[in-house]
Amino acid sequence: MSKKTFTLGIFGGGQLGKFLVEAAKKLNIRTFVFTDSPDSPAIYYSDDFIISSYKDKKKLDFFIKNIDLATFEFENIPFKTLDYIEEKINVSPKPSIIKILQDRLKEKTFLKSIGIKTTEFYYLKKINKKNLNDNIFPILVKTIRLGYDGKGQVFFKNKKDFVKYSFKNKDYIIEKLIDFKKEISIIISRYKTKSVSFDAFENLHKHQILQKSHVPANISPKLNNQAKEIAKKIADKLNYIGTMCVEFFVTRKNELLVNEIAPRVHNSGHLTLNAHNVSQFENHIRAVCNLKFKKPKRIHKAVMYNILGHDIKKYRSKETINNEFFYDYGKKEIKDKRKMGHLTKIF
Ligand code: ADP
Ligand code: MG
Image 1 (cartoon, rainbow, N blue to C red):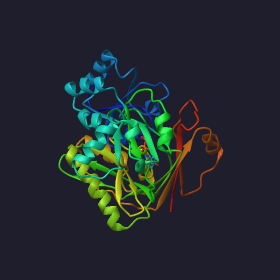
Image 2 (cartoon, rainbow, N blue to C red; image 1 turned 90 degrees about the vertical axis):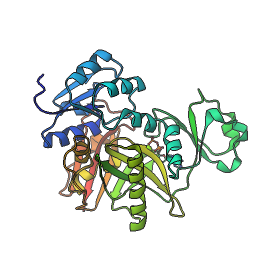
Image 3 (cartoon, rainbow, N blue to C red; image 1 turned 60 degrees about the horizontal axis):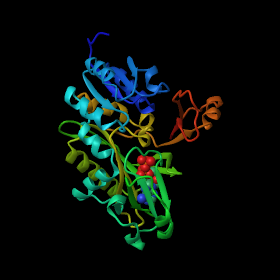
Image 4 (tube, rainbow, N blue to C red; image 1 turned 45 degrees about the horizontal axis):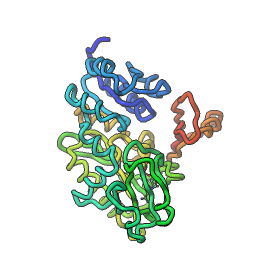
């Protein structure tokens, strides 16, 4: 394999990786995907790929030798791998940042330290279950690491059930359940010295999985700007390079609480492929490769629906109409609740 042109290495091979690869191609950048699963949509589009455990040093060495820069479409990369690659190649965003945002406790502690509001939280290891204030219930207890799409979350309505429940270990975070008005997210791309962000996406979750996102979000311009300012503060404090997503709860009192941060492109930004002048994916590539930035502008109103599990079959046989864009991720195995594709409608 020759290394004549610039090659971007991407950790993770899911649909986010597929869209990143396509955006890179448009900018004449070669891509090399490193994934631990053979059922990875991105490998059909990238110039090269490796399917291997993220811990295999020989494979990592080969990958590093053949790329100019690495980035992520997936943040749950083992710490040891993050440390290993940090020393050997340019990586954006920095593995040290991924380590904070991979861990719900570190993430919320960091946010608190820079004066950003989150939902009230406790570390299970550091509390006595019986002493937890009754006022915090109902609660969600989440695994600190490796959770996604609601995986690793347990709900407790009252203290009695919570005290009775025995956890496998104590690496859980306890969060007050927020009776929110709505959920929004901000997708921001930070370059070395400046950043650009999309206006808020409004998101609806069902069983903790994103079901639908739409733009414009039905919020005031003031709240939209506040959310963008918070996202900018987080990106600046982290000295982040690349695209990240900040998920918020809008409380009944119109207060913004940060729910979580994804150090990568995000499902709520899929509609940028069709509704904006530039997609979140292109902006990520531009930011990490230090190309000229593009300020996002919305061209259409839009709504995006996630297609989960066996529902994909219905969509595969359905004709789309003019204002609809159907994306089939081409995953081989259909699993219940697995993200198989999405449909965006523009207006
Ligand atoms: P994941 O990493 O699985 O996306 P999140 O923490 O974002 O985990 O939770 C998924 C969804 O579950 C959220 O978007 C929200 O709808 C709901 N949820 C999570 N935490 C809370 C909370 N503290 N209060 C109310 N709803 C919550
Ligand atoms: Mg989430």
